[in-house]
Image (cartoon, rainbow over all chains, first blue to last red; front, side, top):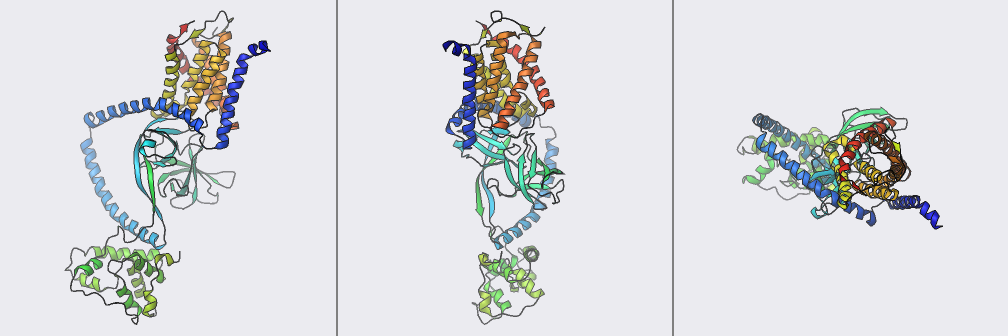
Length: 409
Length: 172
């Protein structure tokens, strides 16, 4: 017996070691979540490697910064001029986008939509990778001690990068979106079709679960849908590169990630996302008519509600000058005007009126005050009423302006 | 003749100091994790595998070879997002085979090293593929063209690496 053991000692050890590892693998696969035992070896490996990575990263960035910020400044003046011109263009664009955003907030408030805001992020540097073609992960230099937790979204300015897979004391492992085990809820920007963005074994990014009878064009932008509860809605994922018909029911859509996943340097870890119901009064410009109504002493306060007054008059009186969410939202719901139309009217009014704000003595000012568009959303209702006269209803009914939550959705 | 068959008495058995035994694999793991970030194409190389083959062939002790392979493979797995053990199993197997081969064959010259590394790289990939597909259901695609290309690239790097590491050998 001893001679047999001695003769096959090498083979027995091999089988034993292989068996132990296969058993360990089976346990990990069964539990699906990371076990403490496997965490220990990960901690050892990461602790052994990341200090070197951090040091090299520091040296690399230090040298790069020294060169780029102190020595290699060729063309900086021209670039500065170009950037200033770009800023001017962007400012103009921002004005327009602000208006659009305010419209969107009003609509969201109207329908009680909750929006996710990225309220807190932590900047981190990418210090290393998993070093394997089969597992596309990177390591960042921020960890548990910096407030990083598992499943936090990792993004760049260009687009999403991945999610935090494992957290260590001073570093964290990030699973990239081109890894085959990743999955991101996605929506196509124009067609609003929803699917799942996944990585492939070859490291490509594909959009799945879009039916083959849908029309998807290359060039269309793909954004996060928020359905995975990791990435807030609306963040850029990438652009559709190629659309092919696959043998099954779904399209095969190849996506080019917005973020350069092969050259990641700095990333942002989203540490806090706030679900917030936008209020139309928030961040919106105050209408000139409202400001004037508050400032001019010659304009008396309207008398208290008179239930016997007809609808049109009542609407003008009951609405406060600044406009609250309830009064603002109540009006459009009572009209038959579609929200988009209502908002376009309002935006136009607001824009026109805002131009009169500094000129309080302008002839248009008194006119604005006397208009029954006291609240921010009421112009829609009033315009609608003006365009299409309605039978006058008794005032009490009108005063019972439904709160936003009572609006049909 | 690149590979010569010799008796176990004829081949030289080497050992390595403890610092080399620790630092060389850790450096290989570190470079494997760090270099692909700088040069994405570098992920096709498998430095830990080359180090495993080198130690196994030099020591010519199957148990030592398989344990070295297991340790390096497990640590390599720990740096990836995959379950720990996929590389461990593959490198254990390669470590065992390489050291068993080292007992029987003299693989000291460049041609022999190129051929041995190429063959062991392919064996490693086959075992890895089987374990990854069979045990953790990783959807890998096998491409002979890609694997042979990677094997050749790794073999070339391996030859250079082995000559660099030869200076750390100590005769028993």
